[in-house]
Image (cartoon, rainbow, N blue to C red; front, side, top):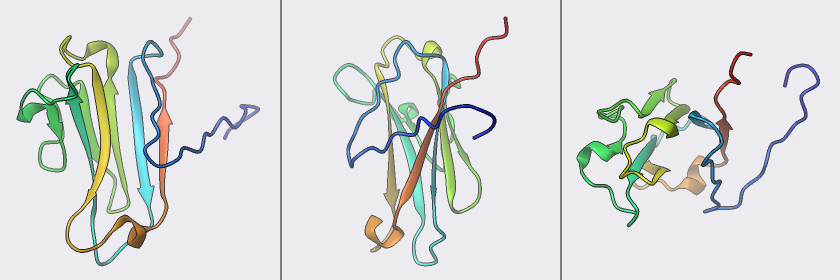
Length: 129
């Protein structure tokens, strides 16, 4: 971290949830891991309604559909070991209540084969005075 900013990193246990409501607009969640030759990790995002359901295919953001049609949820890939989801919470359609971010592995590998995955959540930059 730069300058005199405190380290406010929080370690979450498996399945933990962080509630970001009313705390800004476009949050970015970045997942990074060590290089694997026998598997690929795919980060995905689900824009879900009050019943925790996606209302259609457009609410599933993944490697071959990297952006929600209205641009409020986007997936970016930076090489084979880093992927990021950005969600503009203030612009989400009214029926979307939550953006769920998960990861999947294709094939026989498991997450224990991948090892530690670091998740960084970055708030939007502060508004200029």
